[in-house]
Image 1: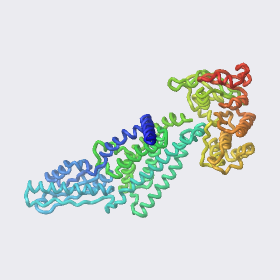
Image 2: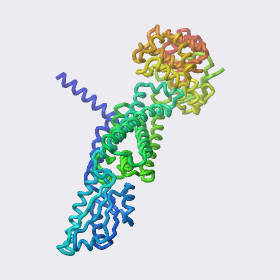
Image 3: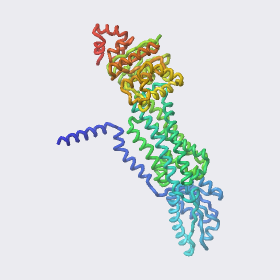
Image 4: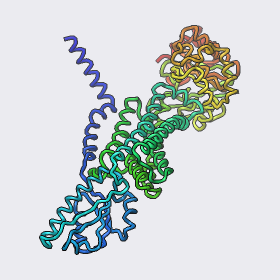
Length: 374
Length: 238
């Protein structure tokens, strides 16, 4: 009986503690629902409006019908016609389209008499998505052929297609996890370890003395950040060498562009980590904050596990602005498609704006919370 | 010459007036003690004088710099040591000294000279390779004190510097405070120990954020009708 009384008292004390701690209440009551709703939308393998362009040299009702067939499929989104063969590579290099349909001259006339074939050029920097695209195309072409047979003649030959994978012709699977793993490692070191270190100063009280010296918050952050930047760069170069050496994946684009993208992402992670460190009180809050606001979105919304284009439309804008998505897209671009500054401008601007805003808010937080504890 | 002056200085947190229209001065080279019960406003006043907390009202100057607008410049002039010692625990005594020396922009030669000078005065030399976390509380406090005076500041703020120490360690710290003041550093300190109040040149007694009395220890003692500072202190309790 005594033991039950003790357990009841402890349970009561715990319930009161939780109910009076806003952060714990947030974690326990709201966060599970947010996670389920948010990531329930993200966890999908169905292709959704993958942008494609068409080079239609046949330009007949039948070729236009094929384009229409692809366009009405929820998996694809028609993003316009190309005029010349040279534009095919450029269209996919930009990264805005994942697929180009090339319909050669004589497509419809040959269909009436003989086997006909179109060419499909698929961006294979994400081999999982490339395979999913091919699977969807198989269904579309089967339906298209069956319709043509009904419409014109039972003797009409099936429209075949030949898929060419660009940028990763062997569909190397290693290319899938590497940018995502690199992203996670950089987030762990530059955001989570840095913010933990800042928070530890707060919890140990060493910030008290530091803030009364000529060292301002900027100097403290810069000094600490330098170390974590160094560690991040060490891991970046190690992974770079390993991927070249073991997986035979070479940076097709400019190494300077590759380093720039990684640096901008590291600074973005640092700024977001600092933002969280500036506004939380305890290490537990910091870890939960990093897990919820940094780690999980980067893991699920970045396209690391599930391609952004397969996510529900409502979640896609959020995913597209997530730092991880910008980093992975830019990484794949520069490593496989040799993209340059123009193609990566969105990723670089997005990450820089986020870093600036996050650091600005972190400054306010440090001013409010860091000095208060002196 | 006055190194600190304040005029009607005030700081509120919501409806709570932590410091209420405090006008005071500190002469260069003197040891000023701030006395008061918990919540009297001592720490808030010290924070404002150090430039880490902006006042809501009034004005003040520390070492010629405005406390609201020039806190960065004030930090170059002051040393600070708080009741809860905040050392770099996983660094040795020497590493702590070297770190803070570099923060105060001392070059190697200046730092070595100063550290040698201080080692001769305090009992830290034989512990210089020990981690800060391995030091007994008296030596930790002494290390914190050494760090606060490492750069020979014009002004030293001590927030209950002897709190929790044994009498011997308190005496050691006080010897160093006197030595520092003798070398020309102005000392502003808060304390709960009334016997230590007698070591100060001048005292300020705070109550509910206001200055209740100020003057030499003898003068404040006389205010209590010769019943001692203890009586005056208890008269100020809420």
